[in-house]
Length: 253
Ligand SMILES: Cc1cc2nc3c(=O)[nH]c(=O)nc-3n(C[C@H](O)[C@H](O)[C@H](O)COP(=O)(O)O)c2cc1C
Ligand code: SF4
Ligand code: SF4
Image (cartoon, rainbow, N blue to C red):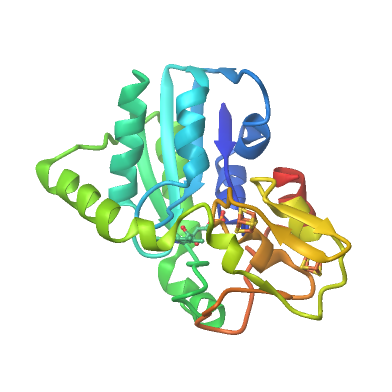
């Protein structure tokens, strides 16, 4: 089994690890000229962003050649994944891929403008993350089918959020509004955890470019908590408790 994953604060890496097999980082795969993956089981694990998919996942699904008998797609999210799974189904069909199993895991929502990370962690027991992952692991082991049905209602929701919500939440210039305070020690970690090579450390400070994935890896993983958004709902950063900073660097560097 091969799993291609994208992670900023560790939830997807943790889920990918729990499912098992060979793990491949999508940001690193995307730096290759050609991406060819062949295995009896292949899956993608990525987060929901703005009721859609991260830009890089859409690009990955256009670029990669995947050959498998059993293709699965798992989204991690805070509060909902079904509409994003619809987008994954559309992208897969465009490539002639058949998502035999699509599902989602409700975890900490790392979207800092709306959610306080302390509150999100406090709510974790209600979400029963381990139970959700156990069920998905059992399904995948049994090669169960759980197809995404592109109903009229789902298509309407996809279009609605795509037009009204997504442009406000994710666009590639978003990092230009991030600020870096005087606690920054120029350690370079933010550049290493950025999956999009969107950060450079210069003598003048930390510079953000215009190809941001809006993943918040830099915000959540800065050891000085020096990077901030114009508006944040709480005061804490988040990284999945089973994942280290070194794991995020290894995934995205
Ligand atoms: C920019 C952004 C937008 C997000 N939008 C949604 C959303 O629409 N719905 C949702 O349930 N979670 C949303 N999330 C939460 C993430 O999908 C969730 O926390 C995910 O598990 C993070 O994965 P990671 O820890 O592997 O980076 C969003 C997170 C970010 C950073
Ligand atoms: S990770 Fe934080 S402290 Fe390190 S260079 Fe980036 S902003 Fe500065
Ligand atoms: S600049 Fe920050 S939010 Fe944007 S892609 Fe890089 S790590 Fe993610």
